[in-house]
Image (cartoon, rainbow, N blue to C red; front, side):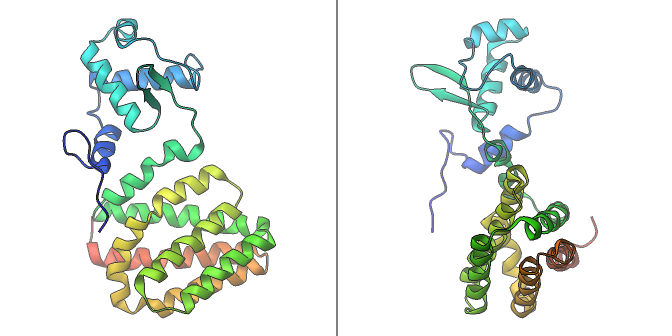
Length: 251
């Protein structure tokens, strides 16, 4: 079993990230986080730029150094800032997936009715991405999707099916040509998230059904039919969503 990385106080990396993403609303630290994010979005702090010292930035924002330290720690954990040993704190040069990686942490830690909500979001985005992919997919990317479909059909091993299921949908998300959407879907479709659903779903005899659903998605992609692709993807995620609703009960 893989070792889970832990922070200096013994928290797992996911727990540190979860804490960082949800500071108490209205606290001084939260306001400091929002101010720093605002400075970045307004161009007052540029990617790659070194932040003022903790003391100077705290004075500039009119808060204590301890609150500033917590704000910087939270933004560093999220990847918005980076600490360079002996040099200081810098604004990260971010790609779309860097900030959106937090979605994966949220998906991995979510339980109960909130898990259903995440599947609702995934159904909406994945059906859109699949429709876009049907219009934009290249022959090479389509061949990669087919390779994972064939591999899923050739095994009854849950771990192998899970791996190819994940790769199948990632290829489609990339084929859609929207990096931000692909990054969000990657977070909402993390291996941990899918594995938690699969553990129960496979007990319902879902392998044959999910193979049929993946085949329908592939046929729509091969036919370059966006609306058929949208419907097939929505039906696929919708099946899992409805099963999960039956497991968690009313919210």
